Image (cartoon, rainbow, N blue to C red; front, top):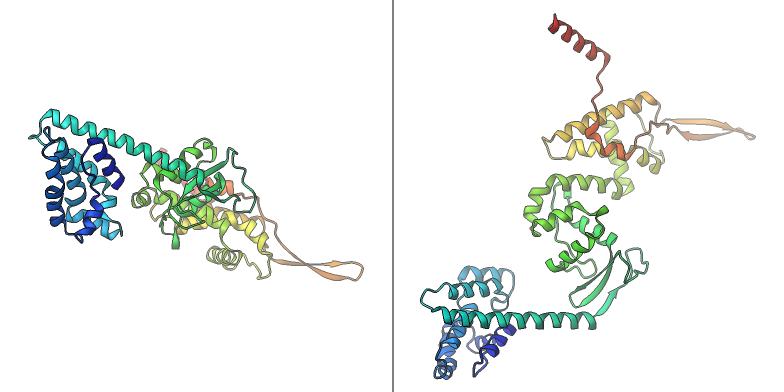
Length: 396
């Protein structure tokens, strides 16, 4: 903002260049005293040659954007630990509109004022772009490897270079997708609590401009585009609105990540609890059952269990997942009632016994579990007979 005001005075060709922030420090933040100095010490020198009041309205504008800030705005900046003078961007355009809407200013003066503002803004944006280019070229490349410590090829189509907090970082699209999803899918105790997307190397939040850069670079390869990030962008990065509008998708994605990223010991205990809930006496799995094999077999069942127990209450998908889980567990039991049991076989020539676990189970994949909405509930023969009898009675 200080640079903008400096350029504005150069464009307007004032005799003196005012630095409002420095003047505010001189009077120890006393806005009333500064207001007097602005007109008594500075505009007095300009008034003799300012026949068309061009400088007058520029001074009014400077006074407005720096010192006529309402208490609510000032409180908001203080809560964010920001200086009001440096972060009143909205105030800057608000004061332009107030001057242009003033019915007591003639059209010629307004036109000259707007030309000065436009010229200043164009020069300011040009210097800002030049500064950004210089910083980018002279900054140090901090990160050149991915999360697996493999070198990232700078000009590869899956590589995204970001300039953040004075340094450059190389990311792969895969790593950025994981970083973004981890933040947006955050759900402690299965409740959606999305987090601000941060740079993992300095723990500083990414700005909107950087998130837009990531978004448009990822759009180049939309085959595996993260849908939650797409929704987050279209909601203008509003976390509260994003949570309320996408709570169902967040929880669904959380379940899909949870079954693969949870520690082995935790997921084994939860799978055992699931079996005890549905088949406490019929399916018994010993403690020394191979963990990796148990997770591989029961992962689709456990996913359905998460959806049926912890998804948003009242949704149709919780009922469909519950029905599908009951049918698949019943199918597992019918297919192999001795699933999980230990069998001992004799081994020649010393006749020693070999322990072997019964792992025979029907084929059930994660892709099938994800399509639980296509499942048709299985009815027993008695229920079918009853339905036929009802149909006969109704026809007769």
